[in-house]
Image 1 (spheres, rainbow, N blue to C red):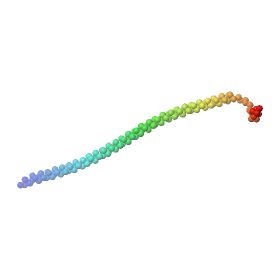
Image 2 (image 1 turned 90 degrees about the vertical axis):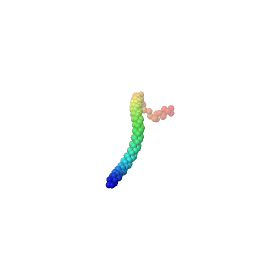
Image 3 (image 1 turned 60 degrees about the vertical axis):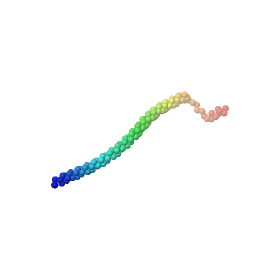
Image 4 (image 1 turned 45 degrees about the vertical axis):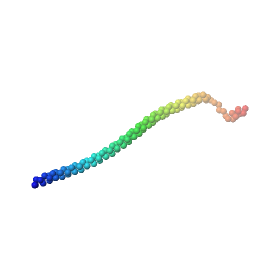
Length: 128
């Protein structure tokens, strides 16, 4: 009779141990699922952050492009203004040279010995 009790106790102890293992495996499985879920959420958050950073980078790139265009336009404007200033300087030099020529020609055409006319004499001639 002792043999009959041994066999069910043996299976009962094996069953309890395997149930404990199954419960432990289920707990580990749940813990792993929670870790995986947490990792997925972290990845989604990082993906969203990366997307936002790429959008910002794209906007900054567009701003840099606009600023580069404005810089090129400003450089062209500066070069045009430099050319205009140089032309104005040349014209100014030419005008000064013409003034000197005219001044010299006026000095040459005015006789050096001009009799001085007094006001009294002029008034007399006008009356006559």
